[in-house]
Length: 238
Image (cartoon, rainbow, N blue to C red; front, side, top):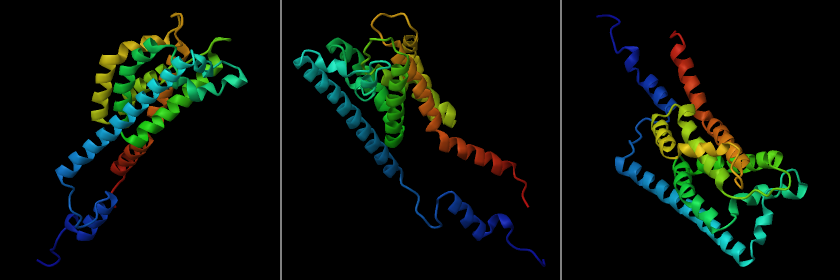
């Protein structure tokens, strides 16, 4: 029949263009399942080494602090004092005593590891956002004359980051992870409320808020891609 031929759906140039948009060059071999499993194992190993190393630093700092009779604790955050602002950098590394550090150890190991396995770069970026913004929030709002120390701000920030990021990114796996984390550690969130003597609820509160912000900021690519997909779907074919 005159004019009959391969329809536009089977146009090789069109298929090549679609593959290029998806980042799959024509003729490129598909990644093997073994390679994907190896990459995941390597990610888990790197995350484990990093968070174990961080906890090792915390214990080393506490050992030095014990040796100098607690003198390092004065390097924490002193609200609204110019010389106390440097404590934003050091406070998460310092603890009041071994009991304080031991109480933070398991949440730091578990939540820190889970944040890092979302991607090493993403996990480090989330940690930096939480570390700095929580510290500044404590410096602005903490009680006058107090000194704030401890990794709890990171714990609360990692917790809310893990809970919210999957929802922001619309990632089913991360949503399930967030729900599991909420089920296990959700009761910690009561710590953002004031009323417990000797507890930096400001650190908990601003850590949690910073984790939410980090989840929003670091899901930006996923949100943009989702908007692009919706725009592409709604476009009328010519």
